[in-house]
Length: 83
Image 1: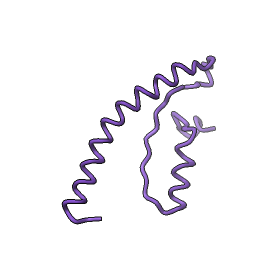
Image 2: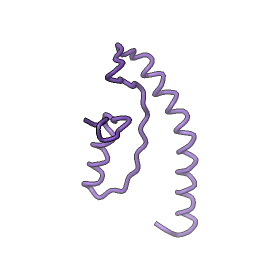
Image 3: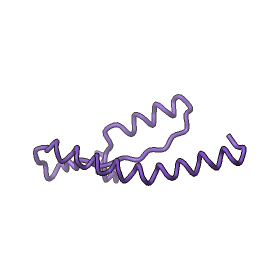
Image 4: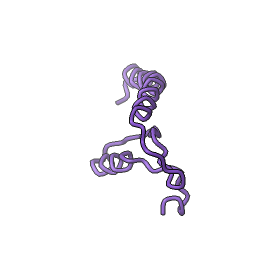
C-alpha cells in the first residue's frame, strides 16, 4: 500500500514518535536511518551483525553533523537572549 502512494521507505518507529510529540505539542524533527532494506521483492534473511554495524556507523556520522548544529543553535539562543 505504501509503495502505491509513493513511499520509498517505511520507518519502524519514527512516525509514532513524531505523532506522540505532536500530541504533546512538543516541536520535533526526525531523521531516520535505514539499517535493513527488507525489500518485499528481494527478501533475504536478516543479518543482525550488519544491521548493528550500519547503525553504529550512522551514529558516528550523524552525531558529528547534528552535534555541531545543535551547539550552534544553543549558543545562538544563549547569546542572543532568545528562548
